[in-house]
Length: 374
Image 1 (cartoon, rainbow, N blue to C red):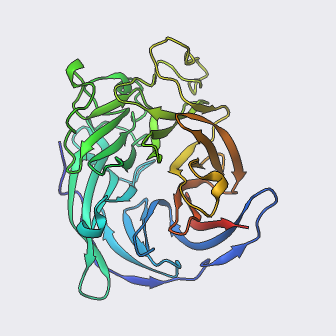
Image 2 (image 1 turned 90 degrees about the horizontal axis):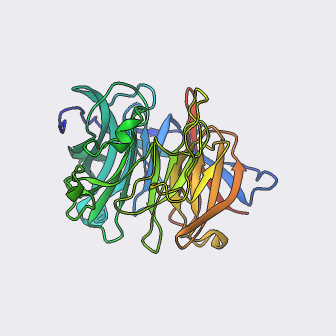
């Protein structure tokens, strides 16, 4: 059931700040980039760039901020009512493929409702508010995970648009409930393929087998990154249990195994069967033991770091790292892993090809850091 009255848009306020803005940090030994701290935020979760180089940044408690290109000023364009307990909050933010004309922004958040809590996909329009700033208005919820359940974890909520701009891919975590990932009627533990209005996309691969019409792939755990490469391949990363973090190449209709197969173990130490040939489950292209705790996912297409063009970058949470995965067609291999000294929640590519990372923050400020070539 879609819930359309769970948020309110706040008034614009413009704030100048300089506590950490534009403070250059020496490049640590072994890092092939220079780190410049641009701004800090209260538990940031995701970010995206506008065509004019400004940024939208989401904060866990429900603030969506529009930040200047140099990080020196910001304004609150929306205040959303979210359930921010545990892993919940205001989550992903992505511009519509036709943003230049529609001004639409898509985002996700966790919400409480009948049966418990779940992740919601929503959108709004970013427009001038007549007072010298901007405002996210016309907000509407498009899709809610089914069912809402108790608990505060594994919402997922990542968004990616198909290369042709016609469809939206949306990740639904299994909410730490294990078995919903294999349940054909639930959207939990799945990659979903939707229309831009949040409806089931036509031609989804499992409808004839009795699956919910939105489902594209299933058998997933906590999917915190999803992105298309330049060849149109859809890549996804997810947190494993005790070990077994994964990068997957997502194909229509396939079962990725959770909770029946994983290269990790349960937290209580009990074994989970590893992925094996011909077990009926699609194995990951890359996995980690010990874990990296993957956050955001970005496929690099810029020119500032030409040696990494086409590779995937992942924010590491518990590993406090930035992770590079070498992508080669439909194959993947581990690349670099740089110690960033803080939990990295999000990684994005900037307009000039720089790599931007958002620290998770937790109980302190999470910094926005720009990585440029040395």
